[in-house]
Amino acid sequence: MNLENIDIVMVGTTHPGNIGAAARAMHNMCISNLVLVNPQCPIGEIAYARASGANVILDSLRKAGSLQEAVQDSILVVATSARDRSLPWPELSPGLVAKKIAELNGQSRVALVFGREHSGLTNEELQICHYTVNIPTNPDFSSLNVASAIQVMCYEIFKTVGNQPETRQTEIQECAVTSQQLEGFFRHLEQVMITTEFLDRENPGLLMQRLRRLYHRLEMSKNEVDILRGILSSVEKYKNQDPSSPGDSEDSR
Image 1 (spheres, rainbow, N blue to C red):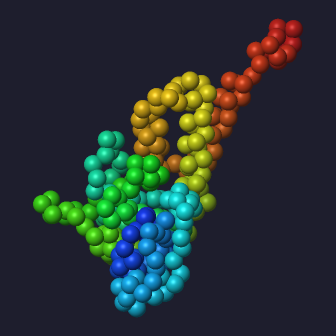
Image 2 (cartoon, rainbow, N blue to C red):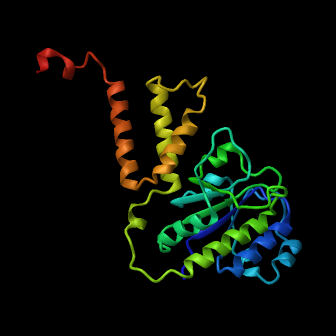
Image 3 (cartoon, rainbow, N blue to C red):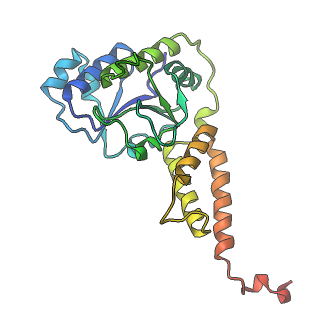
Protein backbone atom coordinates (compact mmCIF):
# COMPACT_ATOMS: atom_id res chain seq x y z
CA MET A 1 0.00 0.00 0.00
CA ASN A 2 1.52 3.33 -1.09
CA LEU A 3 -0.15 6.46 0.28
CA GLU A 4 2.96 8.67 0.39
CA ASN A 5 1.77 10.62 -2.66
CA ILE A 6 -1.29 12.02 -0.86
CA ASP A 7 -1.32 15.47 0.79
CA ILE A 8 -4.09 16.54 3.17
CA VAL A 9 -4.29 20.32 2.80
CA MET A 10 -6.06 22.42 5.45
CA VAL A 11 -6.69 26.07 4.53
CA GLY A 12 -6.90 28.85 7.09
CA THR A 13 -7.65 26.56 10.03
CA THR A 14 -8.62 28.50 13.15
CA HIS A 15 -8.69 25.84 15.89
CA PRO A 16 -5.62 23.79 16.90
CA GLY A 17 -7.88 20.96 18.04
CA ASN A 18 -9.04 20.42 14.48
CA ILE A 19 -5.44 20.14 13.30
CA GLY A 20 -4.68 17.58 16.00
CA ALA A 21 -7.84 15.59 15.26
CA ALA A 22 -6.99 15.65 11.54
CA ALA A 23 -3.52 14.27 12.31
CA ARG A 24 -5.08 11.45 14.32
CA ALA A 25 -7.52 10.62 11.50
CA MET A 26 -4.70 10.58 8.96
CA HIS A 27 -2.44 8.36 11.09
CA ASN A 28 -5.33 5.89 11.55
CA MET A 29 -5.44 5.48 7.77
CA CYS A 30 -1.69 5.45 6.97
CA ILE A 31 -1.70 8.92 5.37
CA SER A 32 1.16 11.05 6.66
CA ASN A 33 1.48 14.32 4.68
CA LEU A 34 -0.29 17.27 6.29
CA VAL A 35 -0.04 20.74 4.72
CA LEU A 36 -1.35 23.87 6.44
CA VAL A 37 -2.13 26.94 4.35
CA ASN A 38 -1.98 30.13 6.43
CA PRO A 39 -3.05 28.50 9.72
CA GLN A 40 -4.74 30.98 12.04
CA CYS A 41 -3.75 29.22 15.27
CA PRO A 42 -0.61 27.84 16.95
CA ILE A 43 0.36 24.18 16.60
CA GLY A 44 0.90 23.61 20.30
CA GLU A 45 -0.33 21.69 23.31
CA ILE A 46 -3.99 21.54 22.25
CA ALA A 47 -3.15 20.16 18.80
CA TYR A 48 -0.82 17.50 20.22
CA ALA A 49 -3.40 16.49 22.84
CA ARG A 50 -6.10 16.00 20.20
CA ALA A 51 -3.65 14.08 18.01
CA SER A 52 -3.66 11.35 20.68
CA GLY A 53 -0.20 10.10 19.83
CA ALA A 54 -0.10 10.94 16.12
CA ASN A 55 2.78 13.31 16.87
CA VAL A 56 4.76 12.25 13.82
CA ILE A 57 2.14 13.90 11.58
CA LEU A 58 2.36 17.22 13.45
CA ASP A 59 6.14 17.09 13.71
CA SER A 60 6.54 16.73 9.95
CA LEU A 61 3.72 18.97 8.69
CA ARG A 62 4.45 21.54 6.01
CA LYS A 63 3.20 25.13 5.88
CA ALA A 64 2.39 27.10 2.72
CA GLY A 65 1.56 30.73 2.11
CA SER A 66 -1.18 30.00 -0.42
CA LEU A 67 -3.22 27.11 -1.76
CA GLN A 68 -1.49 27.46 -5.13
CA GLU A 69 1.88 26.95 -3.43
CA ALA A 70 0.59 23.99 -1.44
CA VAL A 71 -0.66 22.05 -4.49
CA GLN A 72 1.81 23.15 -7.16
CA ASP A 73 3.28 19.66 -7.64
CA SER A 74 -0.05 17.81 -7.59
CA ILE A 75 -1.68 16.42 -10.73
CA LEU A 76 -5.02 15.83 -8.99
CA VAL A 77 -6.49 18.45 -6.64
CA VAL A 78 -9.86 17.74 -5.00
CA ALA A 79 -11.68 20.15 -2.69
CA THR A 80 -14.36 19.32 -0.16
CA SER A 81 -17.13 21.87 -0.54
CA ALA A 82 -20.72 22.03 0.72
CA ARG A 83 -21.44 25.56 -0.52
CA ASP A 84 -23.66 26.26 -3.52
CA ARG A 85 -21.68 28.15 -6.17
CA SER A 86 -22.85 30.42 -8.98
CA LEU A 87 -20.84 28.23 -11.34
CA PRO A 88 -20.99 24.55 -10.26
CA TRP A 89 -17.64 22.73 -10.31
CA PRO A 90 -17.18 19.12 -11.52
CA GLU A 91 -18.12 16.92 -8.57
CA LEU A 92 -17.10 13.41 -7.50
CA SER A 93 -18.31 11.14 -4.72
CA PRO A 94 -15.82 10.15 -2.00
CA GLY A 95 -15.66 6.67 -3.53
CA LEU A 96 -14.82 7.99 -7.00
CA VAL A 97 -12.08 10.21 -5.55
CA ALA A 98 -10.55 7.14 -3.92
CA LYS A 99 -10.80 5.22 -7.19
CA LYS A 100 -9.01 7.98 -9.12
CA ILE A 101 -6.24 8.02 -6.52
CA ALA A 102 -5.91 4.24 -6.71
CA GLU A 103 -5.54 4.44 -10.50
CA LEU A 104 -2.46 6.63 -10.08
CA ASN A 105 -0.75 3.72 -8.30
CA GLY A 106 1.18 6.08 -6.01
CA GLN A 107 3.15 7.56 -8.92
CA SER A 108 1.89 11.18 -8.86
CA ARG A 109 1.02 13.67 -6.15
CA VAL A 110 -2.57 14.17 -5.03
CA ALA A 111 -3.98 16.93 -2.83
CA LEU A 112 -7.22 16.77 -0.86
CA VAL A 113 -8.16 20.31 0.15
CA PHE A 114 -10.28 21.24 3.17
CA GLY A 115 -11.43 24.83 3.70
CA ARG A 116 -11.93 27.10 6.68
CA GLU A 117 -14.21 25.92 9.48
CA HIS A 118 -16.76 28.70 9.04
CA SER A 119 -16.47 29.77 5.40
CA GLY A 120 -14.83 26.96 3.43
CA LEU A 121 -12.83 27.87 0.32
CA THR A 122 -13.06 31.09 -1.66
CA ASN A 123 -14.13 30.94 -5.30
CA GLU A 124 -10.57 31.80 -6.32
CA GLU A 125 -9.21 28.87 -4.30
CA LEU A 126 -11.83 26.52 -5.70
CA GLN A 127 -10.74 27.37 -9.25
CA ILE A 128 -7.32 25.89 -8.52
CA CYS A 129 -8.98 22.54 -7.79
CA HIS A 130 -9.91 20.03 -10.48
CA TYR A 131 -12.94 18.56 -8.71
CA THR A 132 -15.08 19.03 -5.63
CA VAL A 133 -16.31 16.25 -3.38
CA ASN A 134 -19.48 16.52 -1.31
CA ILE A 135 -19.71 13.99 1.52
CA PRO A 136 -23.33 12.73 1.79
CA THR A 137 -24.89 13.69 5.13
CA ASN A 138 -28.26 14.16 6.77
CA PRO A 139 -29.88 16.96 4.69
CA ASP A 140 -31.42 18.38 7.87
CA PHE A 141 -28.02 18.53 9.61
CA SER A 142 -25.28 18.62 7.00
CA SER A 143 -22.61 20.51 8.97
CA LEU A 144 -19.50 18.31 9.17
CA ASN A 145 -16.45 19.10 11.29
CA VAL A 146 -13.31 19.46 9.15
CA ALA A 147 -11.50 16.67 11.00
CA SER A 148 -14.51 14.40 10.51
CA ALA A 149 -14.48 15.17 6.80
CA ILE A 150 -10.78 14.30 6.67
CA GLN A 151 -11.51 11.02 8.49
CA VAL A 152 -14.18 10.07 5.94
CA MET A 153 -11.97 10.83 2.94
CA CYS A 154 -8.90 9.10 4.40
CA TYR A 155 -10.99 6.02 5.17
CA GLU A 156 -12.34 5.85 1.60
CA ILE A 157 -8.79 6.08 0.24
CA PHE A 158 -7.40 3.52 2.72
CA LYS A 159 -10.23 1.10 1.92
CA THR A 160 -9.86 1.45 -1.85
CA VAL A 161 -6.10 1.73 -2.27
CA GLY A 162 -5.47 -0.98 0.30
CA ASN A 163 -7.46 -3.45 -1.79
CA GLN A 164 -5.64 -2.69 -5.03
CA PRO A 165 -3.25 -5.35 -6.35
CA GLU A 166 0.31 -4.29 -7.05
CA THR A 167 0.64 -3.16 -10.66
CA ARG A 168 3.53 -2.15 -12.83
CA GLN A 169 4.54 1.50 -12.95
CA THR A 170 2.56 3.45 -15.52
CA GLU A 171 3.49 6.48 -17.61
CA ILE A 172 1.26 8.81 -15.57
CA GLN A 173 4.15 10.31 -13.60
CA GLU A 174 5.98 11.24 -16.79
CA CYS A 175 3.00 12.59 -18.70
CA ALA A 176 0.76 14.17 -16.07
CA VAL A 177 0.54 17.94 -15.75
CA THR A 178 1.07 19.50 -12.31
CA SER A 179 -1.14 22.18 -10.80
CA GLN A 180 1.68 24.73 -11.19
CA GLN A 181 2.03 23.95 -14.91
CA LEU A 182 -1.71 24.15 -15.38
CA GLU A 183 -1.85 27.52 -13.61
CA GLY A 184 0.86 28.77 -15.99
CA PHE A 185 -1.33 27.71 -18.92
CA PHE A 186 -4.37 29.52 -17.49
CA ARG A 187 -2.38 32.74 -17.02
CA HIS A 188 -1.04 32.43 -20.58
CA LEU A 189 -4.53 31.80 -21.97
CA GLU A 190 -6.01 34.76 -20.12
CA GLN A 191 -3.26 37.11 -21.34
CA VAL A 192 -3.69 36.04 -24.98
CA MET A 193 -7.46 36.48 -24.79
CA ILE A 194 -6.97 39.99 -23.39
CA THR A 195 -4.39 40.82 -26.09
CA THR A 196 -6.70 39.61 -28.88
CA GLU A 197 -9.63 41.43 -27.21
CA PHE A 198 -11.62 38.24 -26.83
CA LEU A 199 -11.67 38.89 -23.06
CA ASP A 200 -12.55 42.29 -21.65
CA ARG A 201 -10.23 42.91 -18.69
CA GLU A 202 -12.72 45.38 -17.21
CA ASN A 203 -15.72 43.07 -17.58
CA PRO A 204 -14.45 39.46 -17.66
CA GLY A 205 -17.63 37.84 -16.39
CA LEU A 206 -17.30 34.10 -15.76
CA LEU A 207 -15.31 33.31 -18.89
CA MET A 208 -12.08 32.23 -17.18
CA GLN A 209 -14.00 30.24 -14.57
CA ARG A 210 -15.87 28.39 -17.31
CA LEU A 211 -12.63 27.68 -19.19
CA ARG A 212 -10.96 26.44 -16.03
CA ARG A 213 -13.88 24.10 -15.42
CA LEU A 214 -13.63 22.82 -19.01
CA TYR A 215 -9.88 22.16 -18.95
CA HIS A 216 -9.95 20.60 -15.49
CA ARG A 217 -12.59 18.18 -16.75
CA LEU A 218 -10.33 17.12 -19.63
CA GLU A 219 -7.54 15.97 -17.27
CA MET A 220 -4.87 16.99 -19.77
CA SER A 221 -1.36 15.58 -19.95
CA LYS A 222 1.76 17.75 -19.87
CA ASN A 223 2.28 17.20 -23.60
CA GLU A 224 -1.25 18.43 -24.33
CA VAL A 225 -0.72 21.54 -22.19
CA ASP A 226 2.60 22.18 -23.97
CA ILE A 227 0.80 21.97 -27.33
CA LEU A 228 -1.88 24.44 -26.23
CA ARG A 229 0.75 26.86 -24.93
CA GLY A 230 2.59 26.52 -28.23
CA ILE A 231 -0.61 27.53 -30.04
CA LEU A 232 -1.00 30.51 -27.71
CA SER A 233 2.62 31.54 -28.37
CA SER A 234 1.95 31.30 -32.10
CA VAL A 235 -1.08 33.59 -31.72
CA GLU A 236 1.05 36.07 -29.77
CA LYS A 237 3.73 35.99 -32.46
CA TYR A 238 1.17 36.58 -35.22
CA LYS A 239 -0.50 39.38 -33.24
CA ASN A 240 2.84 41.13 -32.66
CA GLN A 241 4.06 40.77 -36.25
CA ASP A 242 4.73 44.05 -38.03
CA PRO A 243 2.52 44.11 -41.20
CA SER A 244 5.15 46.19 -42.98
CA SER A 245 8.02 43.75 -42.28
CA PRO A 246 9.94 42.41 -45.31
CA GLY A 247 8.53 38.93 -44.80
CA ASP A 248 5.08 40.20 -45.67
CA SER A 249 5.94 42.24 -48.78
CA GLU A 250 5.45 41.00 -52.35
CA ASP A 251 9.09 41.89 -53.19
CA SER A 252 10.33 39.37 -50.67
CA ARG A 253 8.55 36.45 -52.33
